Image: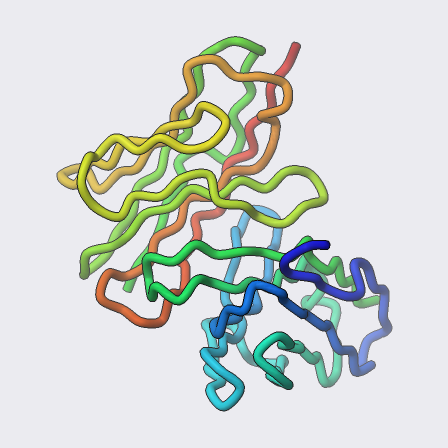
Length: 114
Length: 115
């Protein structure tokens, strides 16, 4: 089983719909992240969480919200999806070594908003 | 603030040729440096990282990278590539002394190895 699991792997949704992307991990890491990947832009940070009571905005949080239901679960929601949110979304965890720690990524969720 | 520039968006090479993927960074604080690789339809995985010590870092699959502080670079190299090295490669930095652990990524370099 993968250390970081994302569901769904692919999703097509209509403009204005609410959608949730889910992430679960078996690494036992406190730190979890949501990134968005667009072609030619690399990965950009949406939200991050250091524990269930700590949620922080990243550089592109507008239009997104998150929920940390447990240490192992971190969900990303699009309250009202729009076409420019079409992208590949990655959930990641990192080892508890601060900036030194290795990150572990899920396989990604490809979201298309039509 | 940190920024990462990967100087080539695409690098095509023939099998068994050497390759260098270039990465420069800008930061007002000291950083840790990473290279991640993304194979088709997969998530990113760590290739290698520089934390301290020797500026030449060896990673998985025969890759290595050299940290050059004066040039603020962290170029990735492999002396002889294989078809299986075809993937997208991301250079990333994180801030030393920060507890955040967040990564700042470059835009990626697509390495394509031809037979």
